[in-house]
Length: 137
Picture 1 (cartoon, rainbow, N blue to C red):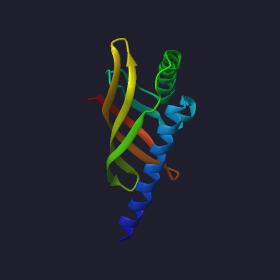
Picture 2 (cartoon, helix red, strand yellow; picture 1 turned 135 degrees about the vertical axis):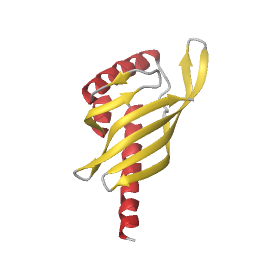
Picture 3 (cartoon, rainbow, N blue to C red; picture 1 turned 120 degrees about the vertical axis):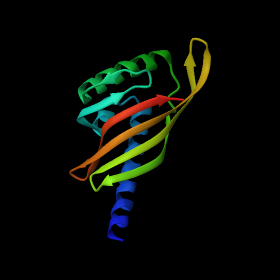
């Protein structure tokens, strides 16, 4: 029973982490958004680009957000946590569906959607993203 209670609290922490993750993303606050990742994070984008540290992850996502702001892009990115599997008390695999409605493209408006697979580790009571695979649907 103690294990289930621990996982319940950790599920709440992970859910809160991703609520803040989405909030900062939509506000273009990428420096703060970068605090959800480990320093040695690996982030593979939906287009296949591989960022091999959080420093690169933040710099490249900031460039993308600067471009999105310039385009007047709709920033109502949504994320739904679909599955949280605990490997051990400090490691979890998270699957999430993201949805970005009304995304402007040269060909018109798209409703974009994808799946994130993430490995999270718990450090000093905080869940951090170690690895991300982003796949567009």
